[in-house]
Length: 331
Image 1 (tube, helix red, strand yellow):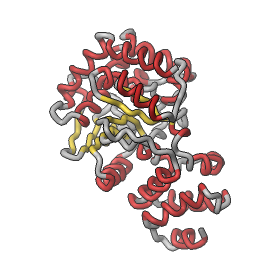
Image 2 (cartoon, rainbow, N blue to C red; image 1 turned 90 degrees about the vertical axis):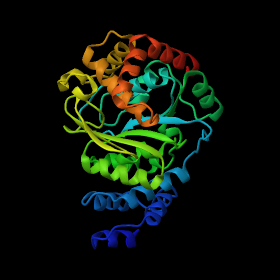
Image 3 (cartoon, one colour; image 1 turned 60 degrees about the vertical axis):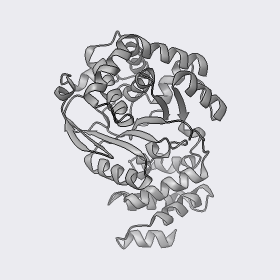
Image 4 (cartoon, rainbow, N blue to C red; image 1 turned 135 degrees about the horizontal axis):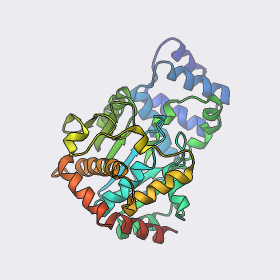
Protein backbone atom coordinates (compact mmCIF):
# COMPACT_ATOMS: atom_id res chain seq x y z
CA UNK A 1 0.00 0.00 0.00
CA UNK A 2 2.89 2.36 0.71
CA UNK A 3 3.87 2.23 -2.97
CA UNK A 4 0.35 3.15 -4.05
CA UNK A 5 0.11 6.00 -1.55
CA UNK A 6 3.44 7.42 -2.69
CA UNK A 7 2.21 7.41 -6.29
CA UNK A 8 -0.86 9.38 -5.25
CA UNK A 9 1.15 11.93 -3.26
CA UNK A 10 3.36 12.40 -6.33
CA UNK A 11 0.27 13.25 -8.38
CA UNK A 12 0.22 10.00 -10.32
CA UNK A 13 -2.81 7.86 -11.09
CA UNK A 14 -3.12 4.13 -10.54
CA UNK A 15 -3.56 1.54 -13.25
CA UNK A 16 -6.60 -0.70 -13.65
CA UNK A 17 -4.53 -3.67 -12.49
CA UNK A 18 -3.32 -1.79 -9.42
CA UNK A 19 -6.79 -0.84 -8.18
CA UNK A 20 -7.94 -4.40 -8.90
CA UNK A 21 -5.10 -5.69 -6.74
CA UNK A 22 -5.90 -3.14 -4.03
CA UNK A 23 -9.53 -4.27 -3.88
CA UNK A 24 -8.52 -7.92 -3.65
CA UNK A 25 -6.01 -6.98 -0.94
CA UNK A 26 -8.73 -5.15 0.99
CA UNK A 27 -10.92 -8.28 0.97
CA UNK A 28 -7.92 -10.27 2.22
CA UNK A 29 -7.57 -7.67 5.01
CA UNK A 30 -4.01 -6.80 4.02
CA UNK A 31 -4.50 -3.10 4.80
CA UNK A 32 -5.61 -1.26 7.92
CA UNK A 33 -8.37 1.35 8.01
CA UNK A 34 -5.92 4.27 8.06
CA UNK A 35 -4.28 3.05 4.85
CA UNK A 36 -7.63 2.54 3.14
CA UNK A 37 -8.84 5.98 4.24
CA UNK A 38 -5.63 7.60 3.00
CA UNK A 39 -5.98 5.89 -0.36
CA UNK A 40 -9.60 6.93 -0.78
CA UNK A 41 -8.90 10.51 0.29
CA UNK A 42 -5.92 10.74 -2.04
CA UNK A 43 -8.06 9.68 -4.98
CA UNK A 44 -10.99 11.85 -3.94
CA UNK A 45 -8.94 15.05 -3.95
CA UNK A 46 -8.47 14.82 -7.70
CA UNK A 47 -11.40 12.51 -8.66
CA UNK A 48 -11.13 8.88 -9.75
CA UNK A 49 -10.04 7.98 -13.27
CA UNK A 50 -11.81 5.55 -15.58
CA UNK A 51 -9.03 2.98 -15.23
CA UNK A 52 -9.06 3.23 -11.45
CA UNK A 53 -12.84 2.86 -11.31
CA UNK A 54 -12.80 -0.15 -13.62
CA UNK A 55 -10.04 -1.78 -11.58
CA UNK A 56 -12.12 -1.54 -8.43
CA UNK A 57 -15.06 -2.88 -10.43
CA UNK A 58 -12.98 -5.83 -11.64
CA UNK A 59 -11.96 -6.62 -8.09
CA UNK A 60 -15.49 -6.43 -6.70
CA UNK A 61 -16.87 -8.68 -9.41
CA UNK A 62 -14.02 -11.16 -9.01
CA UNK A 63 -14.38 -11.42 -5.23
CA UNK A 64 -18.19 -11.37 -5.27
CA UNK A 65 -20.91 -13.78 -6.32
CA UNK A 66 -21.68 -14.00 -10.03
CA UNK A 67 -25.21 -14.65 -11.29
CA UNK A 68 -25.44 -16.18 -14.75
CA UNK A 69 -28.43 -14.69 -16.57
CA UNK A 70 -26.58 -14.36 -19.86
CA UNK A 71 -29.31 -16.07 -21.85
CA UNK A 72 -31.72 -13.21 -21.08
CA UNK A 73 -31.71 -9.73 -22.59
CA UNK A 74 -32.16 -7.53 -19.54
CA UNK A 75 -31.84 -3.93 -18.38
CA UNK A 76 -30.70 -2.41 -15.10
CA UNK A 77 -32.00 1.04 -14.18
CA UNK A 78 -30.29 2.73 -11.24
CA UNK A 79 -28.61 5.96 -10.23
CA UNK A 80 -25.32 6.50 -8.44
CA UNK A 81 -27.06 8.21 -5.54
CA UNK A 82 -25.39 10.92 -3.55
CA UNK A 83 -27.21 13.76 -5.29
CA UNK A 84 -28.65 14.92 -1.95
CA UNK A 85 -32.10 15.42 -3.49
CA UNK A 86 -33.99 12.78 -1.48
CA UNK A 87 -36.49 11.79 -4.14
CA UNK A 88 -38.92 8.92 -3.72
CA UNK A 89 -38.05 5.53 -5.27
CA UNK A 90 -38.29 6.69 -8.87
CA UNK A 91 -36.02 4.14 -10.55
CA UNK A 92 -37.61 1.23 -8.66
CA UNK A 93 -41.08 2.36 -9.76
CA UNK A 94 -39.75 2.76 -13.28
CA UNK A 95 -38.37 -0.77 -13.25
CA UNK A 96 -41.83 -2.23 -12.72
CA UNK A 97 -43.28 -0.03 -15.47
CA UNK A 98 -40.59 -1.25 -17.87
CA UNK A 99 -41.28 -4.87 -16.86
CA UNK A 100 -45.00 -4.30 -17.45
CA UNK A 101 -44.13 -3.12 -20.96
CA UNK A 102 -42.64 -6.54 -21.70
CA UNK A 103 -38.95 -5.85 -21.16
CA UNK A 104 -36.88 -7.85 -18.68
CA UNK A 105 -35.30 -5.94 -15.79
CA UNK A 106 -32.50 -7.18 -13.53
CA UNK A 107 -32.51 -4.39 -10.98
CA UNK A 108 -29.51 -4.02 -8.74
CA UNK A 109 -29.89 -1.98 -5.57
CA UNK A 110 -29.30 -1.52 -1.88
CA UNK A 111 -30.66 0.11 1.24
CA UNK A 112 -30.59 3.86 1.39
CA UNK A 113 -27.31 5.71 1.76
CA UNK A 114 -28.34 9.30 1.11
CA UNK A 115 -32.14 9.33 0.79
CA UNK A 116 -34.86 8.17 3.18
CA UNK A 117 -35.56 5.03 1.16
CA UNK A 118 -33.43 2.93 -1.14
CA UNK A 119 -34.70 0.23 -3.50
CA UNK A 120 -34.07 -2.51 -0.94
CA UNK A 121 -35.91 -0.54 1.75
CA UNK A 122 -39.12 -0.14 -0.22
CA UNK A 123 -39.16 -3.75 -1.47
CA UNK A 124 -38.44 -5.15 1.96
CA UNK A 125 -41.23 -3.00 3.40
CA UNK A 126 -43.62 -4.82 1.05
CA UNK A 127 -42.47 -8.22 2.26
CA UNK A 128 -39.90 -9.06 -0.41
CA UNK A 129 -37.22 -11.50 0.71
CA UNK A 130 -33.90 -11.05 -1.01
CA UNK A 131 -32.12 -14.02 -2.51
CA UNK A 132 -28.91 -14.95 -4.29
CA UNK A 133 -30.39 -18.24 -5.50
CA UNK A 134 -29.99 -18.20 -9.28
CA UNK A 135 -32.95 -20.51 -9.85
CA UNK A 136 -35.27 -18.24 -7.86
CA UNK A 137 -33.98 -15.17 -9.67
CA UNK A 138 -34.60 -16.86 -13.02
CA UNK A 139 -38.09 -17.86 -11.99
CA UNK A 140 -38.91 -14.28 -10.97
CA UNK A 141 -37.51 -12.94 -14.22
CA UNK A 142 -39.42 -15.40 -16.36
CA UNK A 143 -42.74 -14.96 -14.56
CA UNK A 144 -42.71 -11.21 -13.87
CA UNK A 145 -40.02 -9.80 -16.23
CA UNK A 146 -38.26 -8.59 -13.08
CA UNK A 147 -35.76 -9.85 -10.55
CA UNK A 148 -34.03 -7.93 -7.81
CA UNK A 149 -30.38 -8.27 -6.83
CA UNK A 150 -29.74 -6.97 -3.31
CA UNK A 151 -26.15 -5.74 -3.48
CA UNK A 152 -24.81 -7.04 -0.12
CA UNK A 153 -25.64 -10.62 -1.14
CA UNK A 154 -23.24 -10.36 -4.07
CA UNK A 155 -20.56 -7.65 -3.68
CA UNK A 156 -18.74 -9.16 -0.72
CA UNK A 157 -15.85 -6.73 -1.01
CA UNK A 158 -17.97 -3.73 -0.07
CA UNK A 159 -18.29 -4.86 3.55
CA UNK A 160 -14.53 -4.57 4.04
CA UNK A 161 -14.52 -0.86 3.17
CA UNK A 162 -17.85 -0.06 4.82
CA UNK A 163 -16.52 0.95 8.27
CA UNK A 164 -13.83 3.16 6.74
CA UNK A 165 -16.26 4.89 4.40
CA UNK A 166 -18.69 5.46 7.24
CA UNK A 167 -15.96 6.91 9.46
CA UNK A 168 -14.77 9.22 6.68
CA UNK A 169 -18.28 10.61 6.23
CA UNK A 170 -17.70 11.92 2.71
CA UNK A 171 -18.37 10.50 -0.76
CA UNK A 172 -15.57 8.41 -2.26
CA UNK A 173 -15.08 6.55 -5.52
CA UNK A 174 -16.93 3.62 -3.96
CA UNK A 175 -20.12 5.66 -4.16
CA UNK A 176 -19.81 5.44 -7.95
CA UNK A 177 -19.26 1.69 -8.09
CA UNK A 178 -22.74 0.40 -7.21
CA UNK A 179 -24.40 0.67 -10.63
CA UNK A 180 -21.35 -0.83 -12.35
CA UNK A 181 -21.18 -4.06 -10.33
CA UNK A 182 -24.54 -5.65 -11.06
CA UNK A 183 -23.67 -9.32 -10.46
CA UNK A 184 -25.40 -10.55 -13.63
CA UNK A 185 -23.70 -7.86 -15.77
CA UNK A 186 -26.81 -7.15 -17.87
CA UNK A 187 -26.52 -6.41 -21.56
CA UNK A 188 -28.31 -3.06 -21.16
CA UNK A 189 -28.29 -0.33 -18.55
CA UNK A 190 -29.68 3.10 -17.81
CA UNK A 191 -27.49 4.74 -15.23
CA UNK A 192 -28.09 8.12 -13.66
CA UNK A 193 -25.30 10.41 -12.48
CA UNK A 194 -25.51 13.58 -10.40
CA UNK A 195 -22.98 15.65 -12.37
CA UNK A 196 -21.78 15.97 -15.93
CA UNK A 197 -18.25 14.98 -14.88
CA UNK A 198 -19.65 11.75 -13.47
CA UNK A 199 -21.66 11.27 -16.64
CA UNK A 200 -18.53 11.45 -18.80
CA UNK A 201 -16.71 9.11 -16.42
CA UNK A 202 -19.55 6.60 -16.72
CA UNK A 203 -19.76 6.89 -20.49
CA UNK A 204 -16.03 6.21 -20.80
CA UNK A 205 -16.36 3.27 -18.40
CA UNK A 206 -19.26 1.78 -20.37
CA UNK A 207 -17.35 2.16 -23.61
CA UNK A 208 -14.59 0.00 -22.17
CA UNK A 209 -17.07 -2.50 -20.68
CA UNK A 210 -18.74 -2.82 -24.08
CA UNK A 211 -22.40 -3.03 -23.08
CA UNK A 212 -25.44 -1.18 -24.43
CA UNK A 213 -25.77 1.83 -22.18
CA UNK A 214 -27.57 5.05 -21.49
CA UNK A 215 -26.21 7.55 -18.98
CA UNK A 216 -28.45 10.41 -17.92
CA UNK A 217 -28.04 13.46 -15.73
CA UNK A 218 -30.38 16.34 -15.06
CA UNK A 219 -28.99 19.84 -15.38
CA UNK A 220 -29.91 20.73 -11.80
CA UNK A 221 -28.00 17.88 -10.22
CA UNK A 222 -30.40 14.93 -10.03
CA UNK A 223 -29.00 11.46 -10.79
CA UNK A 224 -32.09 10.63 -12.87
CA UNK A 225 -34.60 12.42 -15.07
CA UNK A 226 -36.24 14.80 -12.62
CA UNK A 227 -38.37 16.90 -15.00
CA UNK A 228 -37.31 19.85 -12.84
CA UNK A 229 -34.86 20.84 -15.57
CA UNK A 230 -33.55 19.68 -18.90
CA UNK A 231 -31.40 16.56 -18.97
CA UNK A 232 -28.68 15.05 -21.11
CA UNK A 233 -28.82 11.43 -22.30
CA UNK A 234 -25.72 9.80 -23.75
CA UNK A 235 -25.96 6.34 -25.32
CA UNK A 236 -23.84 4.16 -27.60
CA UNK A 237 -25.49 5.89 -30.54
CA UNK A 238 -26.23 9.49 -29.66
CA UNK A 239 -25.81 12.34 -27.22
CA UNK A 240 -28.83 14.60 -26.83
CA UNK A 241 -30.27 17.25 -24.54
CA UNK A 242 -33.98 16.97 -23.77
CA UNK A 243 -36.44 19.18 -21.96
CA UNK A 244 -39.62 17.88 -20.33
CA UNK A 245 -41.55 19.54 -23.15
CA UNK A 246 -39.73 17.33 -25.68
CA UNK A 247 -41.37 14.36 -23.98
CA UNK A 248 -44.78 16.02 -23.94
CA UNK A 249 -44.48 16.57 -20.19
CA UNK A 250 -44.52 19.63 -17.94
CA UNK A 251 -41.68 20.98 -15.85
CA UNK A 252 -41.95 20.03 -12.19
CA UNK A 253 -41.07 21.77 -8.98
CA UNK A 254 -38.52 19.83 -6.92
CA UNK A 255 -41.04 19.48 -4.09
CA UNK A 256 -43.26 17.38 -6.38
CA UNK A 257 -40.73 14.53 -6.44
CA UNK A 258 -39.47 14.88 -2.87
CA UNK A 259 -39.48 11.58 -0.98
CA UNK A 260 -40.51 12.98 2.37
CA UNK A 261 -38.79 12.93 5.75
CA UNK A 262 -39.48 9.30 6.67
CA UNK A 263 -39.24 6.01 4.80
CA UNK A 264 -42.98 5.53 5.21
CA UNK A 265 -43.67 8.74 3.31
CA UNK A 266 -41.52 7.56 0.39
CA UNK A 267 -43.21 4.15 0.37
CA UNK A 268 -46.63 5.80 0.32
CA UNK A 269 -45.66 7.72 -2.82
CA UNK A 270 -44.29 4.53 -4.40
CA UNK A 271 -47.60 2.76 -3.78
CA UNK A 272 -49.60 5.72 -5.05
CA UNK A 273 -47.67 5.86 -8.32
CA UNK A 274 -48.17 2.17 -9.08
CA UNK A 275 -51.82 2.41 -8.02
CA UNK A 276 -52.42 5.42 -10.26
CA UNK A 277 -53.45 7.68 -7.37
CA UNK A 278 -50.28 9.79 -7.20
CA UNK A 279 -50.00 13.34 -8.44
CA UNK A 280 -49.47 13.88 -12.16
CA UNK A 281 -45.93 15.06 -11.43
CA UNK A 282 -45.04 11.91 -9.52
CA UNK A 283 -46.56 9.76 -12.27
CA UNK A 284 -44.81 11.68 -15.03
CA UNK A 285 -41.33 11.49 -13.53
CA UNK A 286 -41.64 7.69 -13.36
CA UNK A 287 -43.00 7.58 -16.91
CA UNK A 288 -40.07 9.68 -18.15
CA UNK A 289 -37.44 7.44 -16.56
CA UNK A 290 -39.17 4.24 -17.67
CA UNK A 291 -39.43 5.60 -21.20
CA UNK A 292 -35.75 6.44 -21.23
CA UNK A 293 -34.92 2.88 -20.13
CA UNK A 294 -37.13 1.38 -22.83
CA UNK A 295 -35.59 3.55 -25.54
CA UNK A 296 -32.08 2.54 -24.47
CA UNK A 297 -32.96 -1.14 -24.49
CA UNK A 298 -35.06 -1.06 -27.66
CA UNK A 299 -33.46 0.96 -30.44
CA UNK A 300 -36.71 0.84 -32.39
CA UNK A 301 -38.38 3.00 -29.74
CA UNK A 302 -37.60 6.68 -29.31
CA UNK A 303 -37.84 8.12 -25.83
CA UNK A 304 -40.78 10.23 -27.02
CA UNK A 305 -42.68 7.16 -28.28
CA UNK A 306 -41.73 5.19 -25.18
CA UNK A 307 -43.47 7.77 -23.02
CA UNK A 308 -46.81 6.65 -24.47
CA UNK A 309 -45.98 2.99 -23.83
CA UNK A 310 -44.91 3.65 -20.24
CA UNK A 311 -47.97 5.78 -19.52
CA UNK A 312 -50.31 3.07 -20.79
CA UNK A 313 -48.60 0.41 -18.65
CA UNK A 314 -48.91 2.58 -15.56
CA UNK A 315 -52.40 3.98 -16.06
CA UNK A 316 -53.89 0.64 -17.15
CA UNK A 317 -52.81 -1.01 -13.91
CA UNK A 318 -50.41 -3.46 -15.60
CA UNK A 319 -47.42 -2.05 -13.68
CA UNK A 320 -49.27 -2.55 -10.39
CA UNK A 321 -50.20 -6.12 -11.35
CA UNK A 322 -46.57 -6.80 -12.27
CA UNK A 323 -45.47 -5.49 -8.89
CA UNK A 324 -48.07 -7.53 -7.01
CA UNK A 325 -47.03 -10.69 -8.83
CA UNK A 326 -43.37 -9.95 -8.13
CA UNK A 327 -44.05 -9.46 -4.41
CA UNK A 328 -46.14 -12.64 -4.19
CA UNK A 329 -43.40 -14.64 -5.89
CA UNK A 330 -40.58 -13.18 -3.82
CA UNK A 331 -42.13 -13.08 -0.34
